[in-house]
Length: 480
Image (cartoon, rainbow, N blue to C red; front, side, top):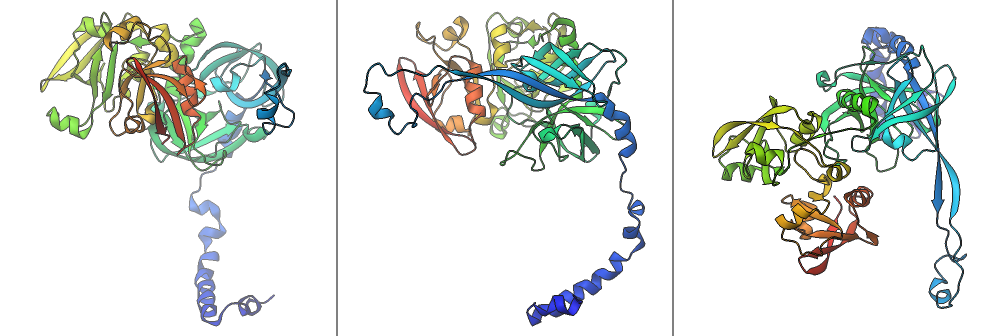
């Protein structure tokens, strides 16, 4: 078909425009730069991919899943009628095997492998496949739910290992590559750039993600994010998607955080975190103005728990923590992340603004209590649901006293702080409230609440059953 034939179907006023565009593009199409892609200085990653690929592994897990079967073969339509008949038998739960795929990377020649906790969590069997197609069973050395990091091991020697970089030196705009097992397509390589650093995506108090537009999909979890020198700068963990697939926004745990966690997992099988014993909140512009602070930065101490390291060090409610061990505290979430990495028993220096003056305080770091470790609490927060602007904690005797709870207030989880202007504040939640249910789901622990809130689609309205003092009420909250 001639060019005239292709244009013949177009309305006459557009024919000249299309022809002009074709003529205008002709010099570009025939330009030497486009004829020779090398002259555009586009990166060629093939050489370094060959070097780093052997240290990446595919992970296949098998889990046992038990599911309650519907009581009525025709679903819920006849349930209201059939339930009236006593003695209706309830089918036994069905148990079956479920398989999942993920990725990992080798960090030592004797078989230690890093991946995401959610890749291997609750697995009955873990099988690792190397780039040369050898397969090994793997055992879990340790895992940390709060950072979503796990360490597994295969019995092998002489394995290729990845080189770990320094994620503190990662810059926005630099090239990066992801290697993984998306949708089961083994050892897939995708390239992109670092889109942002220090991202908080509401997963927990230790959020500090590297954001990238390198394609990450289900199956990439636990795989490495490389810089162009072949060093691991992060571990691919999550995506932001309305479809469930890649939409240009992926997140990786910085490798420095991964290293801090796996060192403890390798030595102890679990992670011990530092603890101050304070509840903190964000410093807003209005707060900064009211407190005559130089800027809306730092972590405002809302409450100091009795008998804690913070209380012994002289930290007071109203202090604004602006640095910890020389590291500036820009946002309140910076503090629990830094404190969590400090060794219990070590001495640290905090700098606070108190009554307009900078004051340095020495503090001996405590050990994060087990119930707070499970809820994600750290140096400042006891439990964290930043997406809803909500801080919660397990109900303890100390908290019952501090919040003047009734003696029988043992159910649910305790709201310890609500951010101004947040969905939780809009719903009417207050510090001292106890969340008993979200919809039909009973809330017995912080983990229960985090799981329900994390699964709420944006815009969905959740109905909370709340206890306030001696009274109980319902509060609707819309997921952001």
